[in-house]
Image (cartoon, rainbow, N blue to C red; front, side):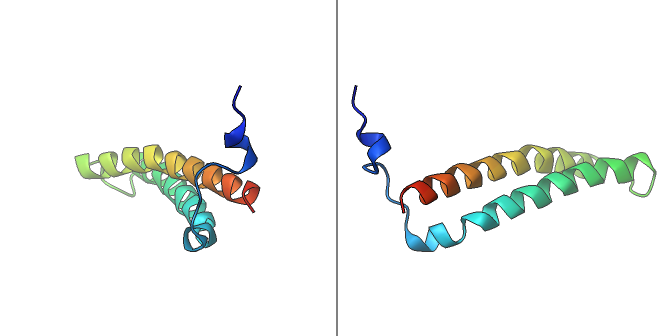
Length: 82
């Protein structure tokens, strides 16, 4: 087997991107929490249930974990490549 990928011969991550990977995880958490809060506010009748509100809540709940996972993977990879 070829183990070069695990010996830091993989993709190089620029220093500028490496400094801001934690922000991607924070954005993911904010999107997840907002995506949970919007349906809760709709349920207790503080927000009106419209197509836009439901679509935004669904999109935030879908995009939040994806961004968090991407930030976590790249941050872990950047720590290994130091």
